[in-house]
Length: 609
Ligand code: M6R
Image (tube, rainbow, N blue to C red; front, side, top):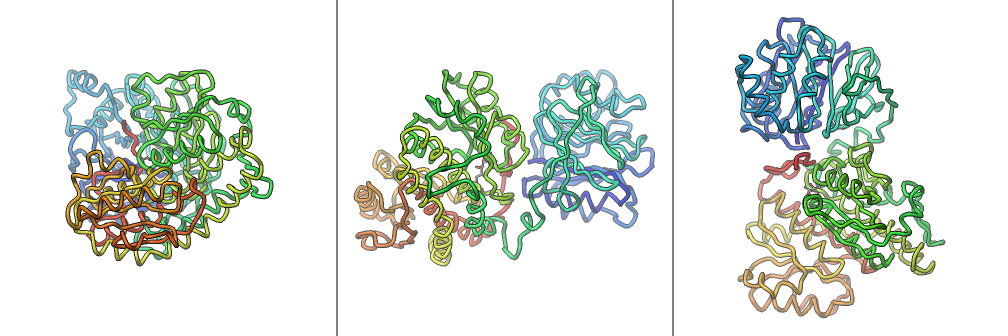
């Protein structure tokens, strides 16, 4: 979604802003722009609809000597993605420029008020309303003007503001939309995402909700909305630059699929001991007793994270014997959820910034639940809001299609289930067997990745078919959902995931000659039932692509194509069966000429409800 970058220091700001915007591209956007404070009476704005390449053609690097500026990638909410609606927006004097992530909910009322004051608007955006309001409140002190304006605003914002009369000053404010200050030597970089900072510094400060920062080349000062000073701790970003670069791959999605063995190693490092059957999750130490007393667990998240939650539901019930439910985060907060004593809510999110998941988490906390997080992005909004939690540690995920984060989420949930299981009913040998199987998963994922050519062959044969089905049972039912989501989000093919046995209750009517039906048919208690489901598909002309365990009885007789994955315990199969589905989706999207890492209409982190 929208991205913010700001720079103040000794260097020309423009190249730094544009490079930062490029690093934020993965979040999804439809227009971009920059504002430079160059000692003129007004700030210099350049902005345009479309990709950053379009913006770059309008920029005059040679004459852009300003050392302070802001840049933005916009994902349209209020007003179409046009040049005029792109950020930055200015007040009507042109002195003040604003970039903004989030939504100003009372912008209509503010717009009416500003119009009565004689303000004429250029765009349809809520952000321009904010810029005009700050302009109206400006009497020589930008920080004060921003504070006064924000006191009149309802909604969410991460914003950066510059003013031609205060060159060398950036003012930033946060409520519900992340902002990070990268602290360099005689320079500071503001961004909504660490990806725009790490080329310059790994020392950062995370702004909290309700905080305003005045940033100059020499330092920064943070205050609350009431102007009370806030002392911030410097923190270190763990990411490295090569983690957010392609490293020889054509796409981040492919890089991240192939990173999974290493990512899962990192995720488990120092956390499991198969010999003793024990799990060490530092983030849960302080709440371990409360967690052990949990009577009910609710897992919540969106999209891929919700699919991981579904696997988690099976894992918690199987290993810890605690009743567990999975809820869409977007539904949870609006349906008056019952939170009794002993309810633990676990919010799952790669980005840690998903608005629906954050809202569900806050709702759970308001109702008295112990709220835990399973998050990848260290220091993110959700990670900060939770009472405790476990980080994925799979490294940054840039591709919009979530891949290694899914594997990391399932791995963390498996470790949490074993952690709780040992405190409940799971025997030490039982835990040892489970953790032994978990510890070899990275190597087995490598074997799954070796099926890449077969997966490409499947994509070559079927990428022009516009309807696919994915079937799975038990632990593999969520994987069927995930496989279908991967295909549709990046290749724009319609795909549906189903519990295999549900097919005959309606969707079977869709099956026609040659329709690709991906069936997960690994060794498990219901294997024979899955074969029956496959027969039902075949007898109606469907083409079965089976994801099977080596040596599975009779699979070659019923399937058009068979892709083998190694054998593991049933609860861990999703970590293996998902890999060929990721690869099939990836190759289908490439063959269809789609923009794999930046699919249409989608954003990496969805920060609006
Ligand atoms: O950052 P989050 O894990 O909270 O994101 C949740 C979903 O928006 C995300 O998983 C989305 O479904 C992905 N595009 C799926 O590949």
